[in-house]
Image (cartoon, rainbow, N blue to C red):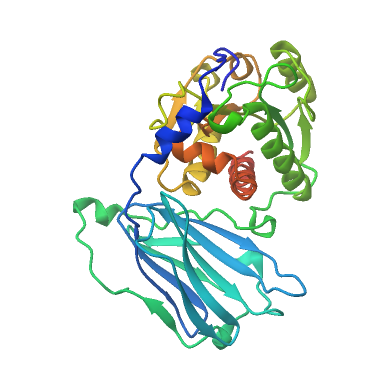
Length: 362
C-alpha cells in the first residue's frame, strides 16, 4: 500500500476466518485437459480465465513436476495414472477457489525449464510444450472434450496469443549485460509494517521477499540493481527518491500490497500506477508490469494501469511505476501473497515486466 495511505487494523482475525469459511466455492474453470503423446499439455477452460503455471525441479527421490492453477474448485479431487516419463496427473483443490492440475514426472526425467511456457492460443485454449520429452511423455491421457467449440462474441477475431510469463529464471527476457541499472523500492519497513491483512500478513514482509527475489533475477540477467532497503529498516520517502535520482538508473519500480477493511474480503485485485506528468515511458513500464502480474493471477480482478501522485513516482526523474500486487485483506489475494511459491512467481512476473520495458529502451 502506498505511503500516502497507511492503515492500522485491530479487527478480530478469528471473525474474519469464520467469514471466509462461509464463502461459497467457485465452480472449476477447467473444462478439459490432455497430455499428448508428443509431449504437449493442452487445456480447455472457461472463456477469458488466466491460468498460472509453476515448475519444481526434481530431487534424487522425486521427479520434476509442473502444475497449473485455475479459478474455481473441482467437484472432486482425483489422480489419473500415466506411463513412461509421466507418472501421474492429479487434479486437486488447494483451497475453496482454485483447481490445481499437477503433472508428476518420474525421477530422472529431464525437463528444460527455459522452454516451459503456458501460452493462450484462444480465449479458452492453452498449450504448453514439454521440451525434451518427445514421445516418452505417456500414452496420451486426458479428461473432457478438448475439441468442444465455445461460443464467442464478435471480438474473438481480435484475439492475439498471450505473452507467456516464464516459469523459471531461464525463461526471462534477455537484455545486454551491464547496460542497464534499475532501482527496486520495497515499500514500508522497520517499525512501519504497511498494510496488515488476513492472518496477520504484513505488507513489509511480503514486498521485501518479492523484491529481494527480483533483485537476484535481474542481476542474473546482467542488470545492476539498487534497492532502497534490503532488510526491515524504516527508510523515509525523500531518501528513496534521492537514491534513485543520484544513481543514473534507467527504471524505478516501487512494490506494495493493498488493503481495505477486514470486513471486505470480497475486494481483490492488481493495479499499477504511474505519474501522468512523467509521460509515455512510465506508462509503458506500468503496462508491462501490470500485464505480467495479471497473467499469473487467475480470478483476481485486473484493476488496470492508473495515474497516481505518490511521492516516489512523482519525484523520480527516470521512468517509474508503483505496483499493488493484491489485497492483503482479500480472500483470494491474501492466500496467494502468503504462499512462498506464488511470491516466487510474482517475482518472476515483475522481473519479466521490467526486462520487457528495458528491451524498449533506446
